[in-house]
Each structure stands twice: as C-alpha cells, then as structure tokens.
Length: 406
Image (tube, rainbow, N blue to C red):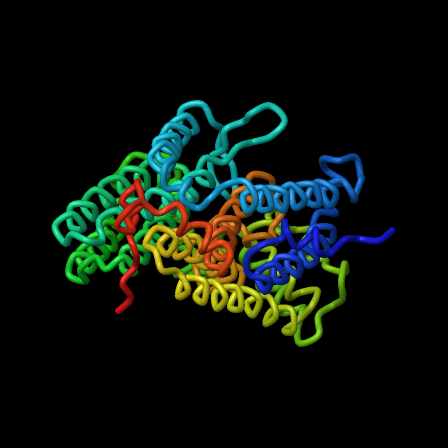
C-alpha cells in the first residue's frame, strides 16, 4: 500500500524536530512502561503484563490525535479568546477536586469520572499558560496597563496555587515558577518580579517552619516530612526503612554505565511509582548512563527548538503562549529528573510524555500542541494567512499586537 506523504504533511505541521523528539520519547515511554508495570499488572490486572502497555499506547495515540486536531482545526488566536473561560473552569475543577475528589499519590488529589480519574492540576497547567499569555499580550503597549495586568496575574495565580497546594504542592510551585518566567519574558519590571519571587520563597519558608504548629491541612505535613527526610535522609531511613527515593538511588547504582538491559529492571518491583514519578531512575537502571544522558538531551533539544520558535514569533500572544508551554514542560521534566536522582525532595510530577498516565498524557499533548500551533503559524504560508485577517492598523480584535523585539 502506497502512503501519500504529501497528504500526510498537510496534517503534520510545525517544527519537525519537535515531532521527532515526541516519537523518540514515545518509543522510550512504551519500553519503560511495559518493563516497570510488571508488578502492578500482577496486583491489579490479573498478571496481564500488556495491559498497561496498551493503555499507554492508547493515550499516546489520543495525544497525537489531539495535537493534529489542534494544528488543523484551531487557529492560535482562538486560544486567547477562551483563555479567561478555561482559567475559571480550572479554578472550579480544582475546588471540585478538593471537595469531591479522592487523595492519591504521585500527582495529588484526583477527581473520579467513572472510567478515568481526572487530575485537576493538569488542567490548571494549561489554563495558566493561556490566561497569563493573554493578559501579557494585551498590555504590552501601555506600561500602566502592564503593571495592572501583572498585579491581576499574581492575584489570580496566587489564588489558584493556594487551592492546588492543599493537595499538590509541587504543581503549585510549578505553576508559580512558570508564571514568573512568562512575566519576565513579558517585560514586567524586574523590581516587581523580584518582590513577588522573594515573597513566594518567604511564604514557603514560613509555612515550613510553622507546620508543626498548624493543623494537618491537606498534604502540609507530608510535604514537610519529605523535606525533612531529604535533609536528614540517613536518620529517617534508619527509622522508617527504605522509601521510594532510596530505591531510586539503588536503581541508578545498578544501572552503572551500560545498564542492566531493557526490561530487566528489578527495583521497579519494589516501587509504587516506578512507572510515574521515578521512571527516570528505572530508565537509568535499564539503560545506564547512556539512557540517563539521552533523556535530558531530548528535553534540551526540545527547549532549543522551542526557543527558536519563540524567536521567530512577531506577535505578542503566540510568543507568550509558546514561552509558557515550553517552560512548563521543561520545569516539569527538571523536577521529575531531579527527584529521581536525589537532587530534590520527593514530589509527584510525571516525566512529560514518558511517564505512565492518562490525563497527564492528554494535557501534555495539549501543551505540545500549543507550541506546534505557534510554530506552524510562523511558517511563511501560515503567516500570510494570518496577516489577511488583521484589522486596519495591524491590531487584532483581542488587542494582540505586533511584538517589538529589543
């Protein structure tokens, strides 16, 4: 059967290197998920070791479908129009998760929706990228308006992060960090950003110090306990035995330079999150230092290509949209790899596009779709199509304006 590659290229748009990185991460994801879910399959899938592999394959395929749909059916400007609604929806869903959801490990509190458990924090990750990008884009031509927008952004993100931190502290930190970087790119004055950043750090330190005196709200004591264990690892290990981060270190040690071989991980049998939060340590166990270097290299290439896409943008909203999407993926990957390697206290963030998961895969696909959508619309043909829709004077109806690069 002959495949019309020309017809295929009509749908596979955007940066080809990012597409290649996605395919490479998919292959690695399927291999490691199949290897690391063996024990889980015997506990929950009647020994069917292909169950979680097929589930991961299904969600990866759905993710690719989402990306292709975004590239061919949704213009970038449409995301600006729905940003406020998506942000409000994210707040409502997070509240619903706190009220009606169930506690869970890894990515925090979940909201069960029948056949799938929905993770409100995943929606919030996409929502803040859209919402912050819109506000920054619509205030670039007026310093006073930019200052007011910055205050509004901090107030809105602060409220969302406060809600999320009750069940998922690491996601709150991730959202806050992404917002600060987007505002920095959005030319918010350094003095304001510095004050906000230091205030955020001071608040976290204060809560940490006051935690023993505070009621056990959400995961407050869990977060403090993980930080304590990270600082005093040896003492805590003797008291409570080996934990997942200890097993992660053993997995890395077993991997050495060349690894034990694909599918030959033993440590994953002792870890409840080997296929999710600690999947990077299992990659190193099986593929050694080579795998340990290759995975960060993939993400660095992704970051480089994202930076190139951002530099090519000549309008404000696509620029900030791509900035936020690239930032949140890179920070999440950094957190996951840092936790797996023992550089950070244990926290629940999946490795983007590699870790086993359902909603996390789909929302990662949405985030990557935003980047590739911006990339596609910066191509010559797409750019001409966008210019035909400009209002007189070169200003878009949603106040998005041309980006003056300095």
